[in-house]
Image (cartoon, rainbow, N blue to C red):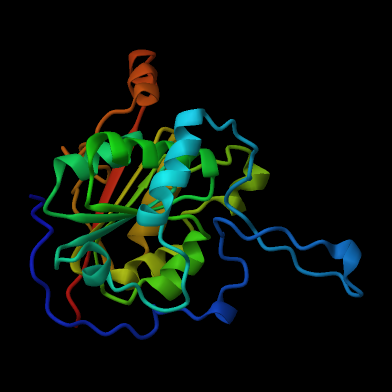
Length: 267
């Protein structure tokens, strides 16, 4: 069991609990662009951290969506999630943002049965793929929300309720002019920190060095978080498995950077 998963005292969030209208440029995970042509006045386009691409759906993924979706995909709601009712037990809760095709997510959930997981992803093929893995592995401690991660955090996740947050290999937006679309930004990290219980952890990983440097600077600048590594980047924790893509990159000499921060106790 992770050393960070232990009972925590009550915690109240104030300034870090950000309302909608204070962060207009916060990256989102599913919000569509505004069509300025249909508006009488030019509308400000929301900065998105993703591009919705049409992906192919295999028959197994489609079947999993139809058969397992009603049970394991949670509808978005504008009220905090009752994890105890969803999972029918009281257990540490970990949120993963952007799980892709869900291979690592399923492996982590299988290896940590004492922890409950909610994965947030906008791409339907990825949701179908993870549902297929849930069925194959008979996982009961994993659920999915297919919605904007920022809205999920703000409305479905209560302050100080998470034991951990995983963000693995988010889109690096490698062109400098697109860096503003990167998910790890100051306001978003403040929101993440507000949802962690004291002692809860935030684990990020990337294979882009300049994004790793930005992550380290932004996470290090959040006063509610403390870096667990004295040298900046952390060793890959046992709970994060190597993906095939990552393993291939490592063999080619590509770097991978893990960052592991914890929420400070309430002052």
